Image (cartoon, rainbow, N blue to C red; front, side, top):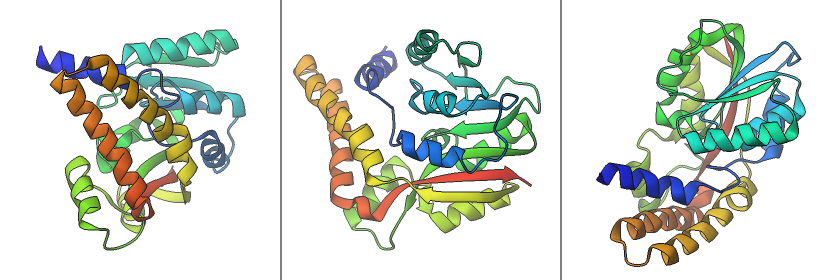
Amino acid sequence: MALERATALFFELFSGLPRQGPGNATSTRRALGLVPGVGPGTRVLDIGCGTGAQTLVLADCSPARIVAIDNHPPFIDALNREARELGITDRLEARVADMHSLDFADGSFELIWCEGAINNVGVETGLRDWRKVLQRNGHVALTEVCWRKPEPPAECTAFWGREYPAIRDTSALLEAAEACGYETVGHFPLPASAWWDDYYRPLQDKVTAFRKRHGDAPDAQELADRCQHEIDIWHAYSEFYGYEFLVLRVR
């Protein structure tokens, strides 16, 4: 019961946001531009799509056929509803599915897209396990948090040590991708606006309303505190870390 409530609170807080993690349309379009030959026959798998902010950009910028997956049914319902309203259900399908165990035939896709979600399985695990559903010479586009500068302050290091101990610098991330059998087509950092304008500012508003709605409920307030702390850490130390957008090709 406690786990069910915690899950419900989490999705209550993050539902209704324009996106569920840092990113923006400009960066999605830039990364897509690094992938050669995307056309009507290209099959794309968007893993951990959330409500589909980046999925809809992909659909708008290319004629590819897209399958988007997430494990939270309301997110999938929202994306399918948007696809119906836009009249693109013939080439965009959202499904409830588990990124830990992809249920697709080998070689089903030319491109895997994963913004802000590969950390849920780990970069190496994701790149190795997901490779089987890619065509030969297929591509992967992903975002992953990285250190930007050496020797971050202790408070920043402690935060990421708790939240994501696997954080590393960009060079180490690229080396990990190479060790998994990929070559780098290109990479670039997400701008600060992709963190604040498109994610943290809307989340800040949600946190404030969430606190008022749940009054003195300690579990809800604890979740709000964690989100607020994450936002505060970014404001204080964003020069030391950020997301890197990688476009990789299977060797």
